[in-house]
Amino acid sequence: MNQDLSIIQLVLHASFVVQLVMLLLLVVSITSWAAIIRKLRSFKQTRALNDEFERDFWSGTSLNDLYASAVQNAKHAGPMERIFASGMREYQKLRERRIGDPSALLDGARRAMRASQQRELDEAESNLSFLASVASVSPYVGLFGTVWGIMHAFTGLASLQQVTLATVAPGIAEALVATAIGLFAAIPAVVAYNRFARELDRLAIKLETFIEEFSNILQRNLGVHAQAAHSTTPTGY
Image 1 (tube, helix red, strand yellow):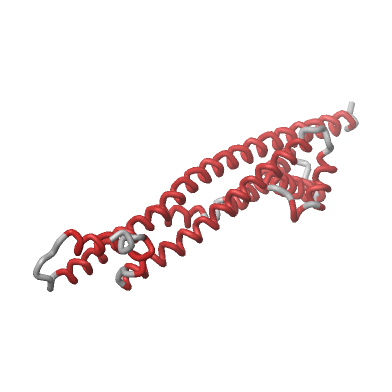
Image 2: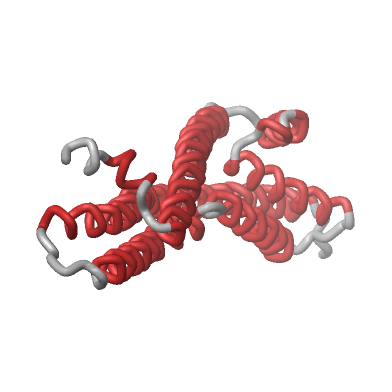
């Protein structure tokens, strides 16, 4: 009895449809775990790169030196550094076009940073929809396998004259394994999705704060340049 009700024996003796559901859920579970591990590494690397650039940004290094370093290190830069590089790139392009309006320069740099921020958030959000789908759909797929397995078990018992618990239990147990595997796939996906959603919110707030701080620095620099240009302009009498 114990051997017949072991997990391996239950899977092997399940109906074809139930085995197919179990296989599908197992593949989904392995895929979701791979996505979870990739996202954990990605968020960890993103935090490290952002913290490193933020230290350099507030260390007193000039904006031009930071921009040169960001361009040179573009392939290995973090989201914050790429946003900074996009803002500085647009700012310098507008300056090269002889645009002297401070508000136009600031708005151009800010729009470039907003667009870069959206790209970074879209990249960080990848695979989250897959985890959400696994979390919401897997229990129902497992339930479908369970219902089908129970139907198959009772259909097989219809021809018996005497039905006991010993004859009913294996078929029902085989069917319930599908629900267990569905929950096994769904629960880690739910936990991971909630954690990554919080990480994404924190990243969005951090990038938004940096954009505002960098915009304030550009605005102060533009004010200083405008005041210097005004002071050197000869006045008429």
